[in-house]
Image 1 (cartoon, helix red, strand yellow):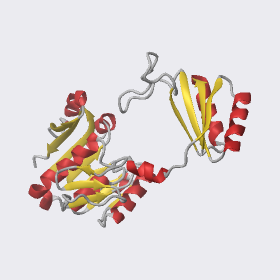
Image 2 (cartoon, rainbow, N blue to C red):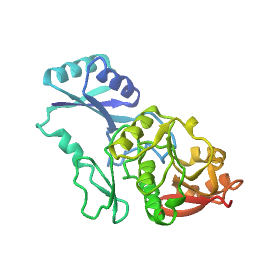
Image 3 (tube, rainbow, N blue to C red):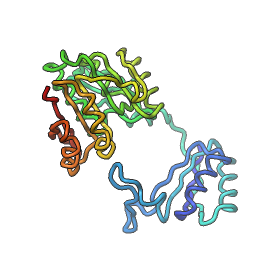
Image 4 (tube, rainbow, N blue to C red):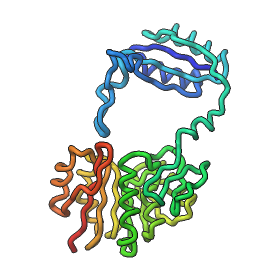
Length: 298
């Protein structure tokens, strides 16, 4: 495996990465701030849901991987000749490593409660786990590691003993990997619909449900119908605000609405957006994020 490292000005990054992947057939290409950790480091990406101010840093480092030295040398020669504002920083051979094992080592079991865990398929179950979701990193969000997902999972696990008998119908809106729907199923929820606008997420949720031997109906949001005793939505504040009438309409009399993907400073915004239908309250917080909950008064 050979690594080609190039320095590029902002305008050159997009055509450079496009050329690396096709026609130069790099195995991968990544972009980082060439001035990271220094006084000229740029905070290009802001809070979740806030678009980046530009597509790349003023000085970007582009790192590409190639299967052999000849391909890396050919790519370097072509790019230096045909792409403006590009400089070669390094071309080097990487030591042979078990890349699969190295990647897997980044993902450890995640404790939601003392007895409920998210466990990658290649790991043994922790001794304390009486319930566990087998979930591997993939295209869809939701591996249990992000605070917003952890809080939703924690809410399900800590309320299931008292409430799960009433969860006759459950909706996971914006399901991603399906982790919340699967957790609800493992804790006694029934009649579960997991919906997402992303076809890859729907496919991932279906596959993950099968791997965990639970039954979900997965599809686009159009399959959600009627009311549900438990409605879960872990998205972001802006879409949650826009979806307020839709989500509230799906909450059954006496049912529960659980929302996450919300920063602490956005609590009032969400409370006001849902006020015509339900009274939202902050039910949990984790690393600057909050979980909000409401119960239908009927």
